[in-house]
Image (tube, rainbow, N blue to C red; front, side, top):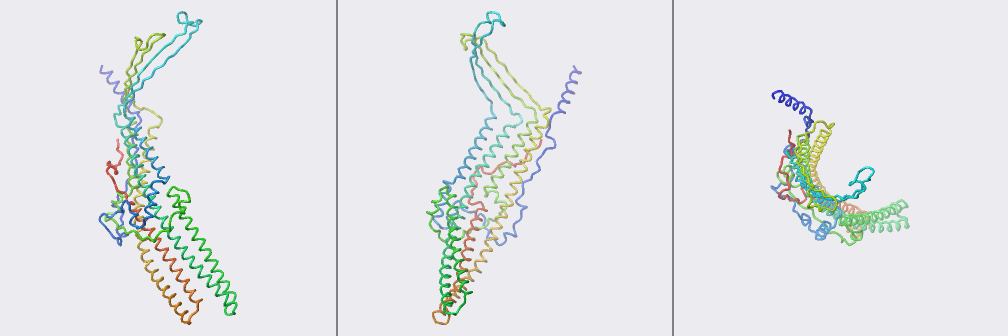
Length: 486
């Protein structure tokens, strides 16, 4: 008996030593610590607030009712949102399938079969006789999931589902900011058209006056051709401005999910003021909860860690139970009264011994998926922090530029006023006044461009700060998202 026990123990040791293992396979990715992403110096000049995040309806702060209506319309009709919502439902279905795979299965079936056996092969009463056979069966199977592999796979599917749900909210934030930015560009395009129209009128007046002076022998053909050039350039700028208006309206029509005629109904936007948003005091860490794309990326890391846990359980012994019961009746016999019945119980234990490296390759792939999810999360985190800093720097620079340009515009206005006074007093010429007027129009165009860029950058800052994303209960993964080792 001792010899048999020793032989069995040695055999078991030899078998186990040959089993496939996950030894040596681990993911390499490490989640970035927000505390190590220093931004103190970059944000030194920023206005800081303990918890001043953009409002959920941040666009109302721009003070334009038409813009608010357009954003609400886009959130209802944009086709991209329908696609995102479909992906959410798809993720929900996959999560439901993974949950269903954890439980037992029970199936029933039955059928009728008829056969005629040749008498040359089978003697009577089987030969030369057509007979019917009826059968019914029930089949029960249950995988005990001893190591929690199926549960981990379900948790991974739930993580992917949560990521898809957060993606849908991120898509709505992105859509609202895109509508606002296109609306700002439409307003600027109208301002460009105003300036281009004024410049065309000025250049035509200057050309007519120059041609009169040439006819009178005061100027020559060089001045005349220069004046013609200015008129042609002004006409080109008019066409450019009109094209910018058409392009902005078309972009808004696409975002609204409507045909091009919808853009034609959008009235000229009023001049918008940039939205003032202070920077939260603990920006790097707080971004983790207020940026939808970061929350979604964190869920994908969590899901990838659960996929690794599920893949590792495939290396371990598995126990399952199968039960099959059936009943058969021949000829005209009633199936349910037949005594021809059988059943079997099939408990099974399985352990992978040799699979050509399939399990290790699968686990290596899951490790790589985890590393990619971590890298994507780190990339989004670093990018988010730098987006905020860059937008704040841009707003600071634009503020300085606008102040300088305002002084330049005021000086140009004063110069034009003086030229008008000189002309009316008979000291200066009308042509001189028209030349000064050109400088004023150029100053006004540069000012309009800077103000439009300021509003656009403020919208980008709102998006960089999360765009009004408000974390809800259950949005953040509760686990550490670090794959367990075995």
